[in-house]
Image (tube, rainbow, N blue to C red; front, side, top):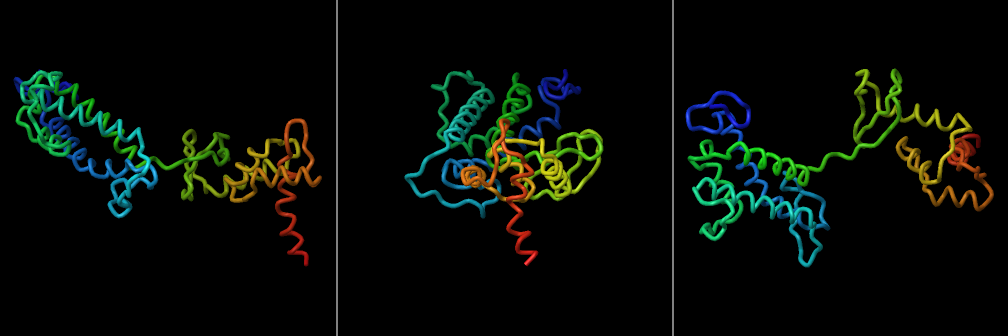
Length: 255
């Protein structure tokens, strides 16, 4: 008989091999550990605490809750109890025969240690479902770092992305490693040294922010209203905004 997850040979009567059984049990135990920080993440006014308890602050009701996290907890709870019924030989959909009074954490732990975890018929199916839920829980607790476009690769012109704290970036196409700040400044030079490069106030503000220059959309429109900045049919010229932005600094340096 083949393992329902990795398709390797298993012992007679087993739906999962020993390795997949251990992975399945480990995922269930990891989810049991994540139940508490997951509940803490319900508070929409707090920064997600993730797996670091020191980042969690106790919620003070009444506070708005994150409905996506609430839905995820409900889904995890329903799946864990359904899995337990399967392991206990009860119809998975017949909740009336489920006499368990334990909470979600205890149910997950009980499932991980159940002797039929690798032998019940739908073990592979539930392993895939649990793995998918675990990935969603990880995304809620430890959201991926926001990455933004910073400029093109010097070698192949592929647009590169980086997080706020990244100092180096590697091109996914040619593999060239470059300093993130160099890429940002090269993009800024391309925009500001070509008077044909135009954009809206919001676009220019965003592009400059990536390169470390702060100028708000409102400031750009104010310059236009005061007659300092011309507006073209296709927007403002990056070079015009750049000259106004660094103008005060140039004046000070001359003095």
